[in-house]
Image (tube, rainbow, N blue to C red):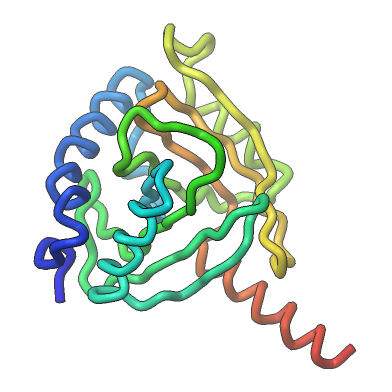
Length: 192
């Protein structure tokens, strides 16, 4: 079943073209290419647990749950679509659903994409910052972080640029590689 056929996901489906339009406008303002690096996944944000549960129920009808992990103290679920959604001309197969923490968002909907830059983790921040104008235009913020899942064995630094509505994040590894590192960790824990 496709995303657009699921009643629990109609708000996301209807907001997708709006999100993509805002993303393209942001890329134009910053002089970023949305085709230079692969878009690994797209993520939603919500501040009501009921919204997260509704989206989860909908996503379970049209995707495969590929990861259910605690990252920075909250559940983050990853779903793989059998048919991709088009984001700025790229096929995107993975949707990330972080459960609410303590932040309220302007709108419960799509929030960011994550692109993979194939560099050593310690080079990510410099490489990604070189893609951005200096200084950033008014209203844009830059954040560098190191999210870590419970079982992750790969360093996963993130550089994010946001205008408060839409965010583009850069990572050195795809989510599939990160999930693979979790599986290796499970095997090592069993052996130990």
